[in-house]
Length: 480
Ligand SMILES: [Zn+2]
Image (cartoon, rainbow, N blue to C red; front, side, top):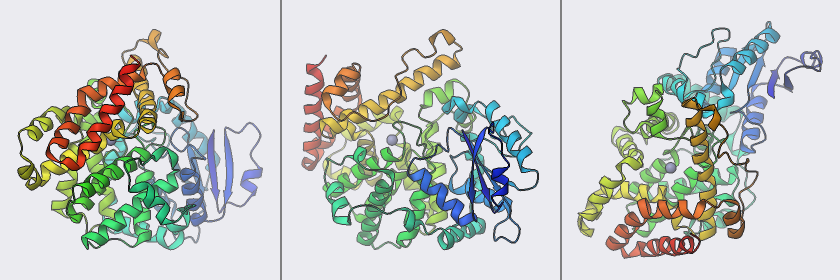
């Protein structure tokens, strides 16, 4: 069901709606309250801003922001959400036209539309365009400079991001989770994940003596990032980003890397999959996604994540994103392309410990790669829960490809029931998902054990991770 936010429109507008209305309306007093409500509902996953349509009807008379400015602000800070802003004049007709256009845009297909829709969109009847990766990419150039600063200041002044991120425990509690390899991101809600990321960034900034945005600025950066990941993805979402950041932080700490290098790498990790469509490069390229064409079919998603992330970082932390750091972030993110995995393994094998320590670009690439595929080195139950989530995404890719190949008889084949919670016992996972042992063994033997064994050979500090991988592998082997 679509939601229509009525901002400064009075309550009459809502009352006048009849019962057959294709949307629910929410009356809001002023833009700050609207933005607080939207961020709050997003963080609590109370409203689906990705699969559904939200329309803001805004009377901007004597207001600080015009309708157009509010639209720009929302599109910039909540880029992956389908939120349109319109003026109050003739708003019912505009709402109807927008909903009609949305219904025809194929948004029900989710990632299919995200991946393949052109940036301009096919519908001229409403100015708002549904989210697509191409549209996201084409908007990046507009978000720099004074305009973005102005909107950032507006959010700081009127919304106070710190009020939106209030956690139930003290920092010692979160550090006790972050400081071990048993970190369980499944057990944390989105607000807590943001808080954990903020703690890591702040700590590394202090250790590296790097100028850092004030805490509220880091929180706004993380809110912007969370709204740029798709919550609708089972695996490639903000939770995965924080999990990879924590693994990166642990690896840097175990190897006693320079804090400045650790900071850049942890920052890269939190942005490394931003705006991921929940599919893969092969599907992007094979069926002619405009984003795949833009990057000539080379590391398509990784290039896309880099461009989106560097744009976001530049808005919140310009001091951090000089040319050298931007390149380091880009290189780190590109190295997570699994098509490059063999090349990295060869480099790792041909390098001595000392020369690897001195080759920072190679070492940091290997660390973020290991962190990105570190699920299978976590304690067994945590590892199995990640396996459940990725199996949903793989299943979705199969479904999507059948649809793209125009094989409707295969539609739905293999589609698992929707997941209302991630099972928290191994027995339940094994009985509900019989494909997981085989899938885990394939992933471990093809990609993970070589990398982790190679790292353990160079650095004794990392041997326990390779041991964890082997222990999980033994468990899955008994079941096949
Ligand atoms: Zn990833």
